[in-house]
Image 1 (cartoon, rainbow, N blue to C red):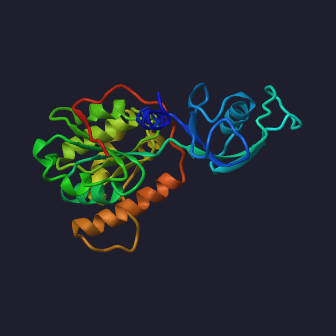
Image 2: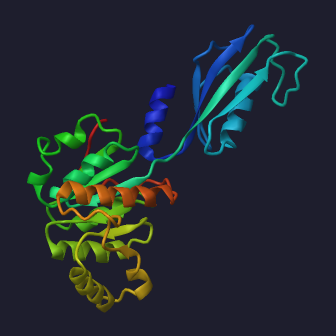
Image 3: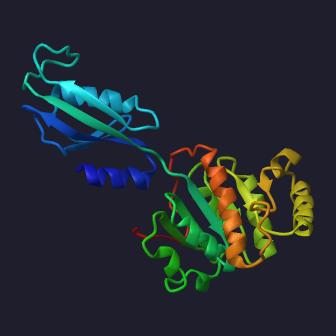
Length: 281
């Protein structure tokens, strides 16, 4: 597998890694500037030159934090070596760049607000799941503003029955927003979300009266007050009073992105979701 395929595979499987690039070469070296390899906790793909150079790169990559790092390795037989002598005579500078697991967000309900929200979120580096029980809300024509050159990796879930089943297939740490057209569907999603502990934040759109009914129902169904408190409602940020879908979506997106930036997203993928259509992009 070449390095570019490896990067794509890590993104698809939500596996963290590090991209190692030969940034500069002085004198003789096994590979020219631009050579790349990908390193994970237990595998590598590609090569930056083998031998001590590559072992040093691999060790440093596996110890890398959240920020990129430059590493210079001397290829002289007089330089200290831990993994065998490499005496090409040159010097290689490596750039180590983390390939983190990106946050995951699932929007249940792609109505007027959901569509505007999806348009905003698609411009961010996310794994974005769009879920609706109404097929006509998920047509390519309607989602064109979302799917036109997105930064996010967008996956569309067309689930006519029991959309809450999608919750169990989402990556651990996924942030969930519930905003469907049907309050009964919203209630089922809230109940199922509370029974899925690996999720991240859970937000529900709606009024105080709607939440009062939901809160009573969730408590009656056996959820503890602490569990019910996992659900945030209303969603959005204070100070945006407009009721237009685009205005609501801006507030919801701002609050969500703040939540995403404050939390870490675990990596393990789960089984394929019902009705999922991966979208390349």
